[in-house]
Amino acid sequence: MFSLPQPFISQWAITDSVIDHYGHVNNVAYVKQIETTAWLHSNALGLSIEQYQAIDRGMAIRSHVLQYHQPLHLSEQVHCATWITQCDGKATLTRQFEMYSEQKSTIVFSATTEFVCIALSSGKIRRMPELFRDAYLPAVLAPGQPSVAVK
Image (cartoon, rainbow, N blue to C red; front, side):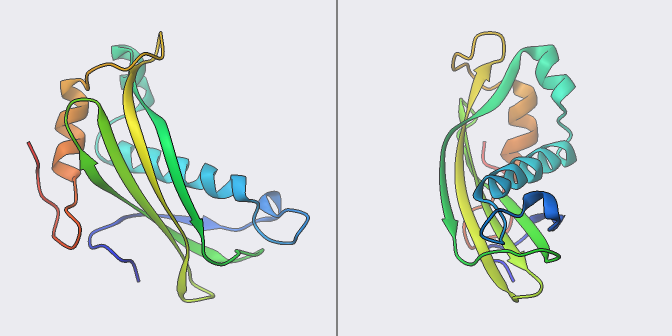
């Protein structure tokens, strides 16, 4: 189903609220869903927004590369996968995303997002704290290989 092994998967049921005037899912909704999936994955790795706030650090988006392969429509059921494909343990982390439509039996969207560690109070780039390294580094997936810890 997905191009890489061992994805973290969230579910997305397409509702009226994300349908645009063309009759399919608005492109902004895909971006919102990858944000939701990334947060769910971070939460599953043991990180919460409260922890981010307590240490004044966060992972902010530096860049997105988005590919819309096929449109999604009302009532479709979508499996949203993410992987951490790179984390330098210093300031940057890269996630890959894919969305699979049950109805179409294919990947309908893919994305790569680069994050950078920042101080929440200033928005300035800062070194990744130990809390982030401990959660994210073991979750890094080498393309085509099982999950490995990269330290």
